[in-house]
Image 1: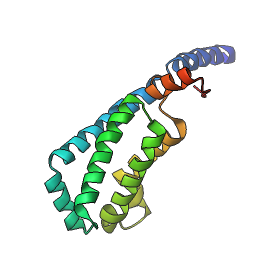
Image 2 (image 1 turned 120 degrees about the vertical axis):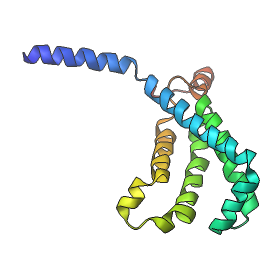
Image 3 (image 1 turned 180 degrees about the horizontal axis):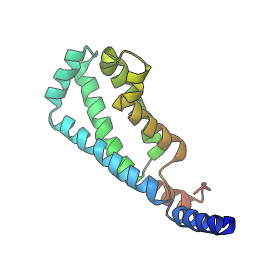
Image 4 (image 1 turned 135 degrees about the horizontal axis):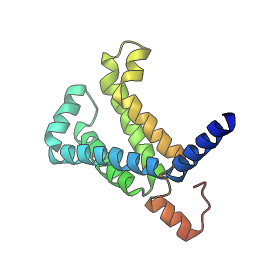
Length: 153
């Protein structure tokens, strides 16, 4: 019985390992599209987005609203492509830290509220991309192979 369980588990784990490239690809495409879409909406209504920055008391609202909107748009596109994934994760993390600190934190009362905030989840996912990279199916991986850069994938 033990041998049967070990063999079955090994086969299932082998099957899952063979498809391990799929997880980062799906997350990158869905998460990247989310940011591309929100960035496009903000760029298309930059005046309205700037007014929100004014209401939140963010300094230089026109500049910062444009910077935030374009960061989301370009960051989402690059994430979907798997191009400069680690690099683009940095401004996306900064964007979310600013949102968390200047906008969201005023309505958060304790650690539970912070952990449940969307921005914390977004920061966590971008942090994962920063550390883990885009995965095998990405332009980053293609460029690395072309340049002869060794990766863990």
